[in-house]
Image (cartoon, rainbow, N blue to C red):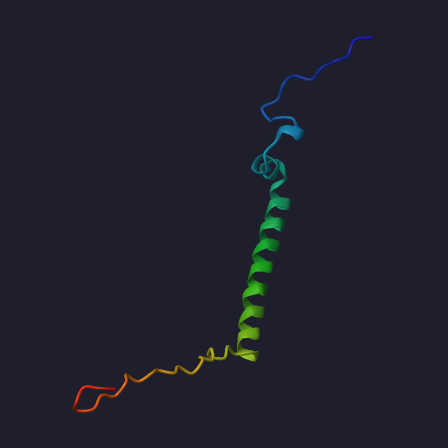
Length: 80
C-alpha cells in the first residue's frame, strides 16, 4: 500500500503556525466577528470604568501631620 502525500502548500502545518498565521487562516467573516468582539469588550470596559469612577470618586490622599521642630531659641548672651 502506498500512501499518497498531498503537495506541499504555502501554509505551514497547523502545529507549526504562529498565532498571526492561524488568525489569517480563518475565514474573513470569522476574523470580522473576532475583531468586533474585541472592540466591544474594550468599549464596555471603558464605559464601566467611567461609571465606577463617577460612582466612587477618588478621595484625595490623607497626609500625615508634619511636626516641624523649631530651632532652639538663643538668648542675647548666646547660651541655650
